[in-house]
Image 1 (tube, rainbow, N blue to C red):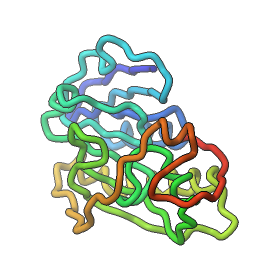
Image 2 (cartoon, one colour):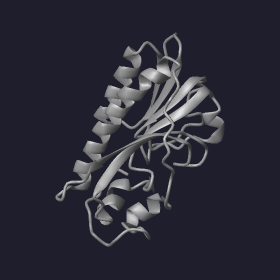
Image 3 (cartoon, rainbow, N blue to C red):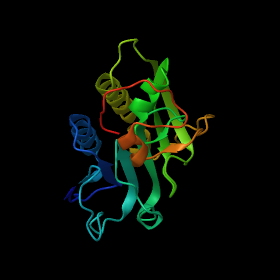
Length: 202
């Protein structure tokens, strides 16, 4: 885990992301927007510090492809709110979303921006964008396309956050079970088919 200290400014953001190239681009855009940005890098399996947020308090927490699950107390450190940009449509919750989609032979996939609450993938949805899944899609290809579309969604919505503008309100709702790391390790989901797919980051 890496936590880079914010510089002075307003609003103040804490980015919580993985270490992908897409997350690096997200960090660059957020800093270029004029906000004061702290960046917490964390992926599943990393050790968890006593205070992973490093004492941060500020305006917004922004998750992007984040594996770290923020507690209710950590979410309260953001005065204005917490948003998450995640791969997967609202009907595929939790982890292993790429594998679930391919196991279902889904025709479409998507990315979802939502307000974060203490429960995973449960907060009010801001925006959903769906796109078709190619017939020969692999988990890796789906992962990269979703990351690219989540990045574009971030570019569209972050200026609203930085400028204090009203965010969209989606009519979509979360549906289906919350998929777990244990299911991902077993490649077994009760609501999906039996098609075998390549393992990628959940």
